[in-house]
Structures are given as C-alpha cells and as structure tokens.
Image (cartoon, rainbow over all chains, first blue to last red; front, side, top):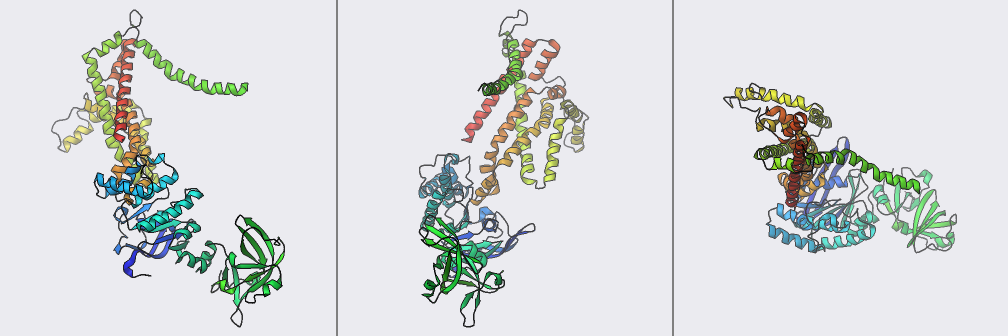
Length: 354
Length: 278
C-alpha cells in the first residue's frame, strides 16, 4: 500500500439498516487514485447499497466516507466530486445525446460553447463522436451504455462509480465492453468502483476485488489473491469452483483428508479443479510420492467444449476435477480411479468450519 | 375460414358502428342543422353569418375563451404544486389516499350544488367578503357575482382535480434514477426540477390543460349560476337557443363555432408546446 496521501476514497466503519434488515455492517475500504476496484457479491449482499452510499443517494447510519481527504458523509450527491454510471444508464430521454453529455458541465458552471466542446471530446473518447444529434431512444443498448459513460466522465471526476453497467448487454458485447472499459480507465486515469455479480468480469478488469456477502466485506485482494488464498469458505465457493475437503494434521505435520462422515469441526482445504489429478490405478499415483491420494470412482463426466469436468466420489466427498480438451479416453462413469493432490496446491482455511 | 372471416368482420364493424352511432351521427345531426335555413329548410350559411358578422357574438366568444385560458393557467399554477405534494412529498400511503379521495370526491357531487355553494360564499354578505372585511383587507364588499372573476373562481374550483390527477400521473412516471443522475452530475434540487423533472412532466401538463380548457369553454352550469345573467358565454347562448327559442339551426351553428374555436386553440397550444420542447 502506498502512503495515506494516495488514498482517494476512504470508507470507515459504515453501517446501514433498512428497517430491521442490516444491509451493511462495519464496512471499511480504502481505494487509491487511479485504481480499479470491483465490489463483487451475490444479489442482496449490499454492494449496490454501498455504491449508493458513496454516491450520496443514501445516508449511512454510522461511519464516514471521505474523498481525497474531505469528509463527504453529510454532503448531498451534487456536491460530491464523483460521477456514476447507472445500471439502466438513466439517460435523459428529452435531451439529445450531446445535451445529455453536456449536462454535467452546464450544471457545474461551464458556458454553452465550452460544455458542448467538452461533450464532443467525451463522445469522441467513447467512439460516438458522430451521434450527438440523436436521442437516446434511437440508439442501441451498447451505444446507450457508452453515452452514459461519456456523460459520467465529461466532468473529469477523480472517482467513477459503475453500478453493473454491463449487465444489460449480451455476452459478446459485454466481453468487448469489458476490454474497452478497462482500456478507457487506464487512459483517463480515473479510479473506478465497479459493482458486479459476475466474477469473471471482476477478475478480468479489476486491480483489486472486494468480495461481499450478507452486508460484510469478506476479503479484499487482487483477483489472483482471492482465487489462490480465499480468506473464507464463502469466498472459496463464490470465486471460481472449488472442492472443500475437511483435513487433519497427522503427527508429523502432514495433511490427511478426513472422510465426509467425520467432517464436522475440522479445518477445510480448498482444492481448485485444475489441481486435482486423476489416475487410472494406484500404481500411477504412487509414482509421485508427494501426492495425497484418495481412492474413488468417477460419478459424472461432463464436457463443455474446451474443458471437461470430472466429478469423482472419494471418501464420501464429491471432488471436482477439470481437464483441458475433450474427455480423456478411459474415463467412464462408475470407473474406479485414484485422485492425486499436491498438498502445495491446497489452501487451508484454519479452524473449525461450519 | 368463414368463421374467422366473420370474426374479423365483426371486429372491424363493431368499433365502426360504435363510433358512428355515438359520435358521428350526433355530431353530423348538429352540423347539418347548423347549415339548414330555419324557415325555408334549404342549405345556408346564414346561421354562421349571423354569428361571425356580429360584434356581440365576437364579444361572447372572447369572454368564453378568456375564461377558458385563465382557468387553465390558474389550474396549472395551483395544481402542479398540489400534484407534486401528493406524488413526491407524501410518504405515508394512507394520507395520500385520503388526499386523492378528498380531491376527487367533489367530482361525484352535482355541479349545480357546488356552483350554488360558491354563489353563497361569493355573495355581498358571503363568507369571502366577510372574511376579507374582517381582516381589514377591503373596506367595501367586492362584487364577485355577475363578474368574470366570480365565474373564474367557480371554474377553477371545479376543474382543478383534473390537472392535479393528470400532472400527478405524469410526475409519478418520471424515473427517479433520472433525478439521481442529474444530482450526480452536479445539479442542485431546483436545477434538477427545471432541467429534468419539469420537462418530463410536460405531457401531463398538456393533457391536463386540454381537458380543463375544453371543459371550461363548454361549461354551462357554473357560468350560468355565477354570472347572474350579466356575463354571457357561448354555452349559455347555445342553451338558450335549444331550450327556450327552439332554434336548433342557429343553436347548432353556435355549438359548431364553439367546437371549431376550441379545436383551433388546442391545435395552437400543442404546436407551441411542441416547438418549445425542441
């Protein structure tokens, strides 16, 4: 982490209740200038509530929010130095695209000519320079999304909030927009707080990801960090795919996997599917003596194009393994196999897990 | 095939019959009568000539439309804040419902009763004059009855609910996220209202205005009761011709004149508002 003077957005101990429902509980998060941070979590986890608190559309019950060192907790939205890209874009239907984008500069004191010059610049930046005369309803979803983006960056805020901005687009367009958005963010150097429930999107774009669940931040880290070393069981299951195996240390400190019937109260090891090796017989597995091995049988083999998912039942656990390419010859459902796991690839969640 | 064809025929014919029976035939009856000579029975424009070439008729038309325009403007000015209050300020649902019921309830009572009520209130010794005198605002009672002001007060009171309902409906449809987007882009609440909320509520203002204007220029009961025979509007003239003089030809011409002028005014207003929206 850099020095405190680099912190652009500081969220301290924020809590928010809606009636009896606790939407956010003791949230703290610091975001640096120019950083791309995703708030990732299932629906109802509080990520959008947090975004609305930062924007000023909601007031926190407790805690403070500062932007560039200034406490903005009590400020209304129009006095906060940030802009928002709304989920439904919220483009003004009665204004042309150019007037939509020029709205921000106009309201913040720029003259008509200056405002339209800056609007044109912002529209050029998102590749819609020639569409200024159209009305939002005359544009496609992807184009509207870019207009919303241009409108939000035209005032050159230090911080941009994005509320699931790509969720309404189809898959192809979404993938393309992810790349464009990331490139744009790097080009203009604005810090992004990006709300999404799509972990691939978060992984592909973010410098850091804050994984949220039930009103709390479970873990903050780079995509690789939260994938390799999930802090909690929730993160392990929500990010990527994982088999959670209860483990026990033997006398000499080595790990052994505990059968499912004795699982309760044990530490849990997180096994990613790409790290589970499958051998057709015991002999193959013992060739590399460092592997933890478990005997089991193949329960399901499912090929989804580029990869094949293999589910093996061993010691009562259903272990997920993945292979690149189509199904390997010799792996059939019901077949007896040996699972081999390199202990170095296991991430341990210490302490009794529920 | 034949069954579906007859179904289609029915679907086309039913609305056609409906419109013909209830709208076209009555209108055409009046229109034909207005073009018929009262004595000889042939076709003539004399009924219209009698209206349009006469100064008195023009003054009646002027009074009618002056009242219509003023009623509409005052209704909007009074109705918009009320609609705003009901849709945007009131958070408690029961209270909003009570307000809407209070607003709509007078519409279910007779126009005559309400206009009579205003006759009592606006009289020389009525509540309005007494209150103003007691408050020291005026020395001698103001004459409301028999003046355009009196009629205006009555019309505004009776027609106000229509604008409140149409504007309220339009305001409720304005997407809240648009106002949030405006605030997010740096606009104060007042600025957001002028640049986002108000422009988006204009369809409600326009439709409310058309309803109120059309009802105000064609109103009979309120002007008849509150004018005391001193102020005449077109609808009163029409009523006299149909009910006392039994001249359906001249009366019909008056009615058609009212209709044409009303449509003209609405056309001009919508043209202006469309140009203004650009």
